[in-house]
Each structure stands twice: as structure tokens, then as C-alpha cells.
Image (cartoon, rainbow, N blue to C red; front, side, top):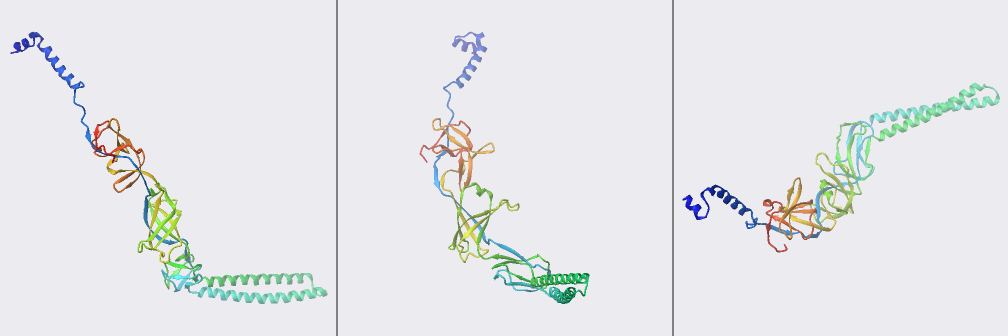
Length: 369
């Protein structure tokens, strides 16, 4: 059979092994020539990048607080005998909030009063002695030394009386400090004393939120600062009654991040707050972002190029894809806001990107959407 096969192709028997090698080489070269089938294109879903002119908002929940608050405390130590204000009470400037037992301070006042009376008596005696010595020295019936001693005694008596008066004033002040009075009109927001309790001087016992300016306080995550929001106009509304509204502006931004909540405290100054927007009310604050063009793609288009986010770009002529890194500005429900990396008119893969590789030929719906 082998001789018949060789004879059919016109080759001698000795050329058999070399010819088999030639057949294998011919078969391999046929697989590599241009007549081989091209790489099959994958079908993907794409979208054209289009900028959108829109205005985004951010809404957060905060609390209405007084702009000025003060911790009130007694200036002397003692036992509380009466308390006249409670949390939530509105007080007027000068109103008595609590009173200490004044027995000790009253005793000091009595002692200082007695010392003043004694000093006045000493002054009268020293004054009479000086006037007598003054008359005698004019007539030559006393010595200069006696006159000088009388004059010195008068000055000491005058100084003693001034000291007694100052001591009496201090004692009366201490007696007045046994009554704790409101320094301004406002609302009591905290209390930490009861009748019978012994308090120390400068120990805070009341917190007074003063009447007047109000702030809406929000604790926000620092990511909100990545966007350019209008800080001069913030819309406020009561959560309990959205019809009660007001406007404000950013008055203060905390320079530090809270270690426990990882948030930054922002205070919004409320302009002409309604009467129903009381202290402690929960409010919703809405800030508008500066209007401008934004590029948004579905979240399914987001891929990764190493540690960086990226999207697949379809070449307009070659219909092949390439992975391009992008900069993300923010995330929305079902969409990603791209800050850099995409240009209007480019076509991105929004579905099927997990099966692609750089240079892959793709096919897609040619419609503009």
C-alpha cells in the first residue's frame, strides 16, 4: 500500500519520511496565513458621553441652637436653699434663678459693719486729738513731736476707715452672690442643682441659651466639601412642619473633624427665624450646588485600572476598546459623576465590559443613545 501511495504521487519510497514532515509544516503554515478566520467581535451595550446642565442639591438634618450660650454658676460656695427655674423656662435678664444659704455671708457683712463703726469712732478721736494739738502748737503750748504724732494718728484712722468700708463692700457683694441671676434673657437648656445641694464657686449649674440670633447646626461628612455648594443661601424647613421655612448662610465651619463620628460641624446662621422654629427643633437644610455641565455614566460602566477607576472607550474607527482611567467626582443612585477623563461625544461601554480586554473588537447598537 505504501509503495502504491508513493507511486501515485510520483515520489520514490525513500522520500517518504521527509515528505511527511513537509505535509505537517504545510498544515501549520496554512493556519497562520491571512486566510485564517478573524477574531470574533463581542456584542456590548454602549452610550455616547453627553454633558448635562443641572443643579444638584444636598439635604441634611440638623438642630436649631442659640448662637450665644452661657454656663451660669455661683461666685461663692454654699448650700442651695431654693431653685426658681427649670429646663425649658424662659427667664428675663436679672431674674433670680437660685439662692444659697446666706448665713455665712450675712455674718461677714455684720462683722464688716461693726468694723466700719469702730473705724469711724477711732477717726473721730484722732480728728479731735489732731485739732487740739494744732491749736496748742499755734500757741506754743505743745511740742512738735506731739503734733506730728497726732497728725499721724489721724491719717491712720482715715486709712482704717477706708479699709473697713472696702471690707464691708466686699462682704455685701459676697452676700449678693448667694443669689444667682440671669445675665440675659433666654431659655434654660440645662440644670444641675437641687435644693439642699452644696455647690462650689464657679461650678456650672445652669445653661442659658440667650434670646436673639439662632443657628442651625449640622454634622456633615467631609466629602460634602468636594462639591462647590452655595454657602450664601441654605434653605431650612422644620421636619415636623415643612411649611415652616427660613433661609440662612454658612457662618462657621469647624476646623477639626470629630474623632468619634468623623464629621465636621457646620453652623448656619438663620435669617429672621420664625417663632415656631424654636430651640432644639429638628430642621432639614438644603444647599444648592453651583450650576454647571457634568458627565454622568451608569455605574455598570465603571471598571478598574489597577487602583484607579476606569471605563472602556470604543474607538470610532477601529471599533476596538481601550481602558481609560477617570476621576470620579461623586456617586448617585445608579450613576457615577465623572470629573475628568471623558470628553463629550466619546462612546463608552456600559454593559459587557467584564469580558473585554484591551484591543478587543466589539459590536454594538449604532444608535446615538
